[in-house]
Image (cartoon, rainbow over all chains, first blue to last red):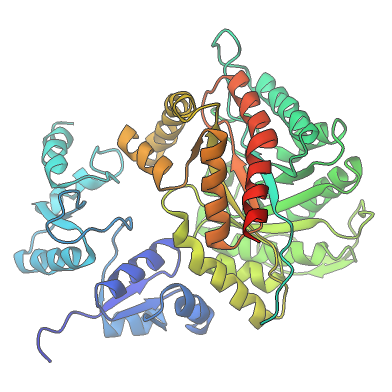
Length: 149
Length: 350
């Protein structure tokens, strides 16, 4: 198989997990989604709300896939669109950062690496960056502001 | 192909008892804000609006923490309007007491009480009433099951982990109809949709942002889950915020500052950044804010009703510190212009 995309496991079949699964499927990823307990509990929801995803147990999702937990909104744009929103990344490992950047780009957002893992605090509640629905340019304005606070 | 009889479209008004401004621009007290909601409900009843739904909050920016008490006040001053909670946070309440309060409301209103059960999107009620937020899912699951039993109005025997067991407990007052209309409010969790279908409770979708189209699969899920469970799925409603004035510009200019204060205050406690005008405009144009002249709001509501295939629309009014007079005018326009116009749009199509 050439250029296989990583298999995505989503833990949580609620509001957030559902949106994530929809985005990953749209972007051509194989998705495993797990709620709490038996997979049959979420089988119908997954079939109707996130067709293409596979309803599994948490064990299976962890065993079969990478695990990604991100807070997202479903406001995607193609590469190059000037109103494309950003998802910021804070991480210590260059190759992990690249992997996550690729995921975010595939979903329809601009990935921006804002620093090492310790910079993740600028993305937490209370920071002007938290939950901000912004573009590339705006992130570069917000970031110094978040750092100075 | 068989033609199904479409249930009549129902229109509601929803409030959390936001604190309005009086004629001098001063914020009302919590007590005056509650009395204002009663005045508004009386007007809504005169105008033939189908439902008023009051939701509970436990924080300073909202006056209503006990919706059914306010509804009881409304009950004795109105004739036809249905009196609903929107929502009753069942997870942090006691199903037995909830039934007692709503069957009392049902008595006072000659059978007009409705309950909308929900898990709540605010968390204040959990520590306040001694519940652990970590039990969020379990509390709702167990209590819905118990409430469904109590609704049968027969002695209840029940055992669980979230409250004391019941042994052939008979709960009073009984209603005259033998049935309190009970729905489940859902914000986007598929499992909540499946749960509503399983008990045969009508579904109320809370769509407070983004495009309403995203909820089409939830409606489909509700129908399919109800078919699997062998229950009825005829009644589906939507709850979204809005504001109506004589012109689009007036509506936006009046609503924006008030909505921003409301949004930013909630955002402050959740870590959101302040609301930007551009985001507001997007919600008005394409999202889930129904703001504008009667014609604009009617067309937008009709489109959503059609897209989702729902038969009840509850418009949340008066978000933030809005002038009380603007709220009253909105209700008048809703009852006299918007609702008739939507009905007209649908009869033109059929």
